[in-house]
Image (cartoon, rainbow, N blue to C red):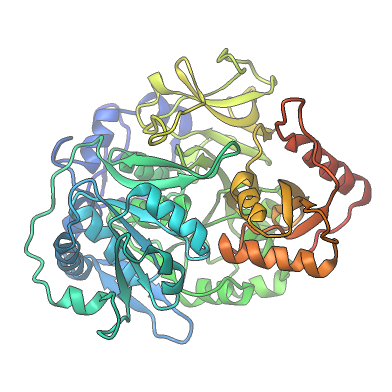
Length: 571
């Protein structure tokens, strides 16, 4: 339930929110008390923390309290309690411990949105180990690179995804759902059921990591970063103030837990609040999404603008069945188009709000459902209480309203900020007291933040952040490709699509069949969302005199072409 501490600021205790609240954003920011926020999530103190306890065990006293609603097309809805998850996580933790997993070790999940995924995450945390998400659309190359670089000890997968992990044999232990006893892998359920689950949860400190994430960059491969346990406080603050998750909500975050937004806010945040989350194990279609919202009685929805635009494309008739059902909708991953906001209000009878964050930060700028403040169409909103967000120039000097600059977080006055750098990598972006996000924005007179554009080359497509270097590296491995450059091309449905400019090796003739073959090659090696949907063969790539690739020239050309022709990109 919620209670009023001294000063009147509402904070969350361990049982989750029980009442509605509408507090002015300015008041919430001014009265934010970091000590109270931490004590509400970690009453055991900063040195006795365990993420499995925080997100599961402490909510298991009530045997009827549901943690997960699991939906799969063609199957009956399953509701799994915190008590059941706690027992299963304890037993699977014993399985992992028997394979040498201890505090600080990495365990990866290469699984769809299933109960086994959640058991794997919680069991990893119970040991004080670090969970590593592996997106199921990744190809073998992307998976192997992440697993080997993280030094991962165990990968948990299923029969559908097991072939992608074939190159990991000998590098780590493989546990497979449905493996049986015929092959070399451990069978998930057989191994779990053979254990008693008597080991205690391992105590950790607030600075100890519980997640390892790989985030795309423009100057090299995906970069690893550790997420410390104290970040759970920030995740809960976002769920409470921006998403307005309440006791009694039917909450569904459609983001995949293989990515930050899904792992932070479909798994960690709701469960830390002791509230129910939803996993829907099925491919995204408009019909299936509307059916799931209707049949599961979803009242609080989160996702990306791409998914929401596809819902809009189906027309008002498809939305009619759930009109008025959704109390709140949250959007993250890319800027939210104003027409989406208007359409949701008219045809779904609900408010959709834009939210901004990064893998490195979590969500830090939002139009809050639970806090009162002005909402401007096209604005990212206001800083989440516990963060001071400003606009600065490249030297870290703060800029005034209407002056475009870089969105930055003042780490000296942001007690909920948890990112301190990449693991075993130099970390750019810290200038004095500020972390510079790399996104170009400007402040409004009322203190809200409006986007101008991005300052780096990371591509945002359908809510995914895609590093061009990784795609270029895969392209170069094709036997016909000599050089490549990858940029984001403006696209009305996906925000951007991945476009590759390819220089072929001598004697290779460009044609449509070769382009399709290169696309299949990259798709199989990386993932379905990051392969180039458009390929243009060129004689040479623009470079500086020192040989550095100038992607911005190619990107600007594509922006100009789309602006002049209004040409539709291939889908």
